[in-house]
Length: 256
Length: 256
DNA sequence: TGTACATCAGTGAACGCGCGTTCACTGATGTAC
DNA sequence: TGTACATCAGTGAACGCGCGTTCACTGATGTAC
Image (tube, each protein chain N blue to C red):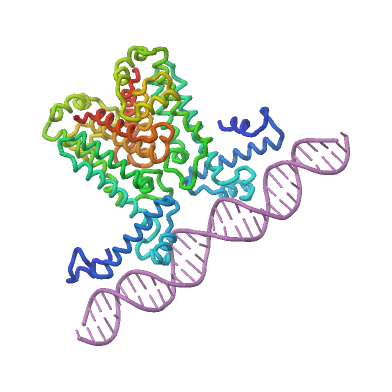
């Protein structure tokens, strides 16, 4: 950003910068790390610039060299959280054979849950109640979509190659085939088609609609577990989660 | 609506009490109303005793005659919110014929969503990320279970009278009948049986497990909608919500 | 090559704010006899 | 019935706290010539 003027002037571009630039990147990282630590300890509302600075041995006003405001720091944490969660889901899905679609779905779901359990306050930051007075800027949109993209991707893999007919492997032809014929109510038909075009091209709208159910179910369950709503019913909820993941796979019509 | 409860709230034995007792009940109610107003305007974290007192033309210390602390006021709001949501769901379900189970499920879901949309901050208070440092006391448990009880109740109505066989009307015998035979993984079998015993006696554990999926789906969807996660995909989400409610009814095996 | 200047990180003090909670008090309402 | 006492709502001042943000500054790092 501000470094563009200095760095482009003949110095080694790219990986390393000037000492100043490297120091800046490192301290920016340290600020975010400490902020995350406080997030984990006390939650988003108790996150304060002063406390972060104090813990880093700096004076509070020094942070303003790195983040223009508390909200900007929050935004950075939100983007990092979406990215970390997205990366976990992507890695889990990518670690399975492309054809094992149901297994990829399972892996994606469990990766999301595991990440959320390991980082409950970061999860709450992105999937909990919105912080009043804070408006998420546009930069968060892309990272926020990564998990949905993973799910859309594995869905698209089923339908890839089959134009008018049902998906390959004959399995999607059973449940998914029925779903593909389904008539969606009202605006949902258009909306599903639009979402499908963005994240799962080639997939019939009804299947996309069912996938969105599975998607809200996934995060609904994780939120319920993390926010304490399952205490007293299905707690621990590992088996319930696994069961729900299978039922959602059925609902969408994933082979396996 | 809540005014009727104010009378029973105090320790007055009959409908009326002394002037003092009636004044106390009324002012307690006014404090909660103003607190709710601030909740709606600025969210839970910005809710402050001082601001409530200021708005009521009282001095902040006067509130301590009614609530021992900020947390106690929060608890009262939480209980009221659970009760209001629960009452809405109960009324909606009760307004349909007992035999129209699927219709009662629909009504319950839509009532919950409508209430949440009408009271987003109160909804966030009970289903959003927990307030750090605040521990919900035991008094919240019963009101928190009212919606689940409604759902459990309509489920139990299907299986009522049929001991070993599938439910009546021959409809649950199709989907629900299959589900009833299902083998649940790990702890989920016990957990579902225990939950069933509490809120839906007579209902097979696998059906209870599927109902819990529907239950988390219901609130997961509402949260996603309210917390802005559906913006850009299914927004407005009325039709998506309605569609998901039907798919969940199918999953559980509700007749209709 | 060295020197003069520009950029930038970090300091320390200050501003103005709102918060939860405590405490001794006043005056009105309720109660016992 | 009236009177003496107890209970209780509400007051106003104060305590101690932490916050986000601004601003003029110092000294180190980087750059142009």
